[in-house]
Image (cartoon, rainbow over all chains, first blue to last red; front, side, top):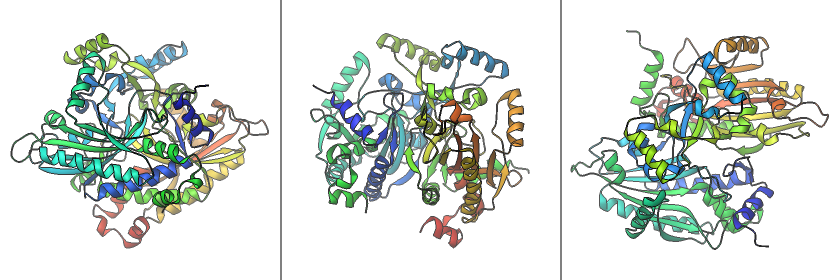
Length: 302
Length: 302
């Protein structure tokens, strides 16, 4: 019997009480073992990121719709977006909405578009905050965000809601490249210290549609995006657990961020996929925390 | 000059670099001083909640739409809801969507309703998880959730996105009442230990519309909901920073949760409004963390 490795791994996590299921694919609750490992990883990532003495911000899982449109997310990844809708009517309109619900209709379609989109990447609010600035010669930001991507899947490492702990650099072109390369080395070392068998790979974002195929190829050829991959569910197809990206002036141009020399700034980021790292650890070390290698336990639970 | 106390307090937080603004009312970023206090409060709340040895779960900021409809949130608080919409079309439909955007139209209205609603209260996924169980005689749950309520406001304590750290009890009617009363005392003591001048008050939820006024009155008369209030922005109108609620069999009935005796279970919860507690602390002790009373600093930053 050839089991789907994603379903098999997901079921092992569920059976061991590491996660709990919901009726929606890609949406899980985290039980205590998951949370304990998550907190340990978060402490280690925070400590490593802090070495650079970045400014620290925590943004909500939403981004203003106008700010969102300055990125090209809607053009490049429309299938992954989340838009927030609400009800703004009176008693009479409320009664009409409930009638649609009671008739089994699409009551969501009756709601109004709000000012908010769900945050797709933890670093976007940083560019919003810096928008229009003309003095950004090299600033670093520590952000931890709850991100949304609309991609239900049986792969327990492909969640609709997940956390990215990022450090973002905004400054010069050379500074951005150095930052990216430095963090490839440091994230390989950090993940390796947890007993994970990792390697960096050139990668691409999942651009949408026919035109997206070309964008993906071009991104790979320019080697701007690297992913640190590890086995989570499928040994034949490792999963990205950290990504190290140069954006060149793509986002800084959209948000009109320049250095004191008047040139458009460049940006780069390292993003730790927190739930994926935890998933890789359970995959590598098994479902029983007590049986994990003592050096890994010492790192995570000092 | 009679300044709006909410705007005045918000501007003090912004000027001191405790929070950062966004173009949307009720949506802020947290800067380092806010995050440090938040983490200190979270550690203290976690420690107090842990004394009861609850089961621990962390759920995403979303709830499956069908599960959501088993609560009466859409009937009682339609003005606060958040519904998640996405794009599910092909290249051709994507081009049409971008045309609506480029023409300045309501492109959000073109999206499709997904399976997800934004989570309005941290405890709802617990009832979803227990749904249909017939053996719940007294279980306790530690949950920490990112909640959404669509209510933009100048009051920096009234956020669209905020965190509730809750303990939830599901069991007997007497057990639920005891739990609620125990936590009124314990949360008053915990908040008092941080130098906050707090008191418990009978409260009601903000039920919508004309019928809602009656529901609010009836909830007050039955004294099911208590709030621990403190001054945040407005000394004349204190803000709820903790709530202690008996739900009777309202939610357990909707989710078909019974005890081993076959009777519908009762539930209760205590919810710590994390950002509001942090706001109350900045209001009480000022914008300069270094100048906070040493006993409060020792509690928060041991």
